[in-house]
Image (cartoon, rainbow, N blue to C red; front, top):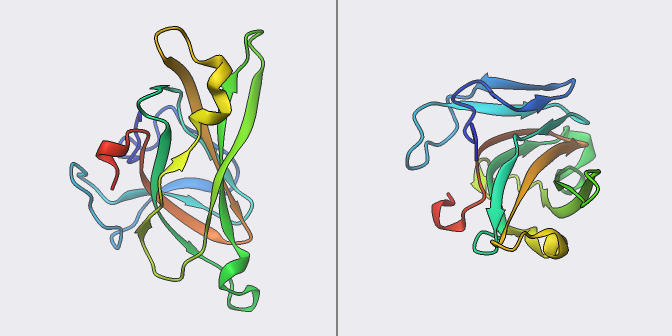
Length: 156
């Protein structure tokens, strides 16, 4: 995924208010990572990845993420909403929900593979690919996200 680890400072990303790239020395380095640059999302903030071409052989996305909710709101109240953005045949952009990521209280952890291509089956080109972007939104918690992958073989 283009600048999936934010090493280039979020080049190509669309960062909404409350979303920014920050240094996070506590972030684990996954194979191939060269820095500790991560995406920080304040509660309610959203960030959208650059478009990436995906195919039937890469139907999932994974993240390395950590969430932190205010003490009074409880561990299970915050989540990271993940949406896949795609264009229909008329060129209109739509969003479809992907599985959300709930707070675990365990610090940095890889998410489970989140299937998204099943939502877009009718938009896959004859070569088996389509272009998508992902929008990440922090709900009722602050989140740090690093190392996004659309290829499950390279997942953290």
